[in-house]
Length: 88
Length: 206
Ligand SMILES: [Zn+2]
Figure (cartoon, rainbow over the protein chains, first blue to last red):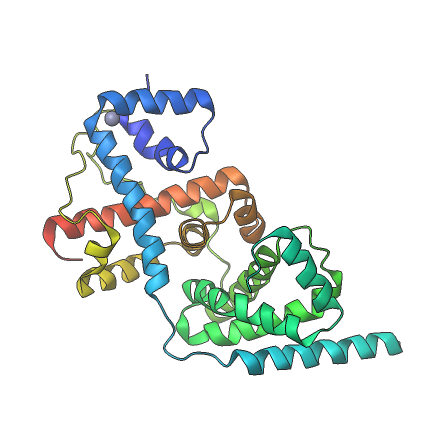
């Protein structure tokens, strides 16, 4: 029988990410049916994932980089490189 | 236009290799800001811009050798991660902390009883959505502090999985660690952020 300790240390994230085999998945599922504490833990861990995602979205750079200039520079760089390699 | 599916990806790669200007525009427009965000998480905002510039130049140098076996995105992220790490090593003059050195226990002592049950179970949180939690400036500061405190590779793994929503296989390639290690890294990172939120919810302090 899977313990709370094992679930919290080993299986919770893999359960969330769908990385368990069916046997492990079933064991976690059965445990969650009877254990309100682990249910809470897994729910909160899911919330952690969503917080990380949302925070990533919120972080917007202060200065918008000049993408056109960068693209032109890289394009030129590539053209030069191609030219020099074909001259070899 | 986006670069979402395999066909668009292949098409873009062909046009890049042919040296089409519009392909370079699309490439930069699609990936520059995400790369910047990813690299800032590794090395901090101050150096991120420079590192990503270097990564772009390295990518252009290797463009002809790239055959499209992985996605363009994970190829670019791998290059960016390598640039960031070599910069970090130079500045710290020490090796990147290897996986095995994070021996800290995942939960504080006494959290579980000897029979494996919770001794101190997770408390309930009154804020139960990302919006509610991130509505507090103090919370954001605390989150940033703890994200930055994570071992670098854990932070990257968390970012790639939960923010970028990459597949495990891609994350393995980018970080050059095995699938089982990636899973451990992600779990450790999430549990640490979980502890931070729990503490914040209980005490209102970081
Ligand atoms: Zn339990």
